[in-house]
Image 1 (cartoon, rainbow, N blue to C red):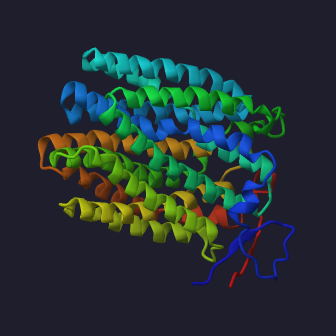
Image 2: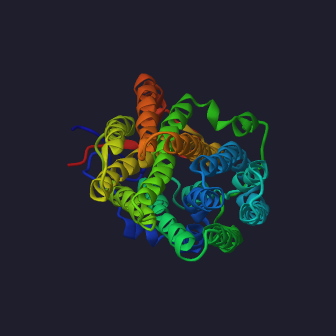
Length: 433
């Protein structure tokens, strides 16, 4: 399949090339100072929804109620994440992150206490709003820091893959940790651990002020560009819909796997099965990052998303742990390529001054899709048969695929050749053997 890979301006466009490896990326000066605390502070996105579902289901006995509380958290995060990203672009990451981390810890522990006290559902909803709204947007912030470190380096493509792999690694560690704590210690332990990791990791990450993107003073010449929302870019809107579908996979599987393992009397397998799904995601992400792709990103997204929709459509047919683990591994293996390609496209679609916001729109879309899926899947599990919640990932990815196919030209035009701020989008394509 003929295709190209982007290279930096210093490379010879006539010479064969391959993507620089992960080793070169991780030797970047100062990288580990924000990668390690950033990994700890990423855990809320992986642990929060599942920890809420397990705790609230334990205290209320209803997956529908648990899914609704988790959904409120996810919707709040989706709505506030882009605003947080915009503030970080304008005022600096540290100024946004420190108060956000403290607010998240307080509100998360309040939600835990209310659930344990068997507070009414409206009280849980009230606590869920600030809990979700204050989730630190570490992933987009780390991606922006890579942009500062690497700028026009060909390592940027490797960094995009590495960050997606790191995201998936949190979805291996997070659900396993949340399930183990909630099932073997106490149902509240997942949220307590999530708050602790947020506090320590978030504050350490914020302390690395030297690696955060500089706050550029707004001048008359570029004020309108700086204040324009990244959502105004047509291609970003298409990616938001695409990532909503990916969120439906995460949310639908979290609830449905929990219901399935409880129905067979082995709730401890929930974290294992979700870990298999996330492991497939992580391994395929590693492979994607190691390949010097010769296919245009928007075309890769179409192919990869089609595979994701087909794999998700088979989930509801599983009636055994082995079959479900196999299908979960397959679905996971198709999620990472879509995520990596989507984030890669952002670099060519959005000016650097609005890129953190753009990344948070995609992260927020995943959270919103996850929230909607948790709600619907919880209702289906309560009202229909065991495993009915698996219909949610199938429907969500199918609808997103239809949108992606219909509007695919909005991704191709600007990502392929339009010049945007700070040199993004003008790399030369070269053929790779």
